[in-house]
Amino acid sequence: MKIFPAILFSILLMLGILAGCSGSSGGPQAESAGSKGKVTVNFWTFWGSETRRPVIEKIISDFNKSQDDIYVKHTFLPWGDIWTKNLAAISAGNPPDVIINDINSVQHRAKNNQSTNLTKYIKDDSFKENFYPRLWDTVLYKGDPYAVPFNTDTRLLFYNKKAFKEAGLDPNKPPKTWDELESYAKRLDKKSGDRYERIGFYPLWGSFGPPSWLMNADNGESFLTKAGQVQINSPEKIEGLKWLKGWNNRLGTDNVNAFKAEFGSEQANPFIAGKVGMWVDVGTFYTQIRDFGKNMDFGVAPIPSKSKDTGHWSDGGGFVAEIPKGAAHPKEAYKFIKYLTGEKAQSYWASKNFDNVSNKKASEDALSKLKGKDKMVYRETVKNLNVTKMNPVPPDAPDYQNKINPLIDEVLLGKKDPEKALKQAQSEVEHSLQN
Image (spheres, rainbow, N blue to C red):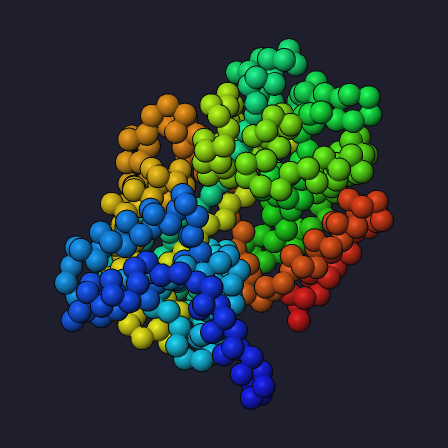
């Protein structure tokens, strides 16, 4: 598409504003001293929190000290802004050398010529063996790698053991099925008149949304199969959507919204505050419990399965290290990526963030070094990878979720019948793929 002068000016202005909002590791003097005579590799991430920023900058520092040819300069950009700025920088011909990007949309960027084919830089045919196969598969487009997996995630059920004891539930026996989940939730509910003081469970809080529950309902089958077949309105998914709607009917939408409105920060997370008995989230949610939970007594378990005959399915996301198309130093960028996804750096990242890293040996090494609750949580996340499904965005239908989610929302708001909504979604996505 042609970019008109006014639009181009707006993009350049936006780049200047975003650059002013970003942060680098080390100021100009530090860069000058450390990069003298070296190729500077510009590395963009969104890791600016107190937990993650020191970890990534330690890895960068170790790499910079490990060799004399490359200096990696880290730039932090806020979540969301980083990818907008990356696309604008690619269009302007001045992208970063390495960027951390979404794992499930690698194929989309490869198809749109926004990332670099790494085939000619990966000299070792066994390189891919360092990573979990399901993660490596997500970075391939027409058989070639366009990124290297950095980390992934999986969802678990966190439950408050103290609340379990108060409700007369065994704190060492979390719910295993949807029926048990509902039964436990009702016993964990605590009300004062019409007002909830504690809600046992609500499936749409945390990081496991309606598409994830429908996948869980259908024994791990997502909306699109690997072969590109659409399976949105299966009987199992229809039943799962009816189940989700039933939670609003039981608790009352007004009660749910009022309860949720009281919380807005990590410190005030309703599960950590003891206001919710069970909560589904990624494994790294543990860092919030650790930092703000004041020695909270909790357990973790696989997400309950729809029935005893189906699996404890979770979905997974994660991030990759990628070289944007047009990067100035792709050869040096790949050398840094190789270090970043190597055993030493990955083990350090995993042990500090409780993240499921992509490097298999690093994951095992990190687990061996952890103790206590740290080890308990990380061990469960590693085990849960066996029932975790990746859902790469299909290159030919990058917006397919946007056709499904609004229809699901209408069902949850009581404006649409579940069966009719998923039938409409099935038809719209099939039409999109055909065209």
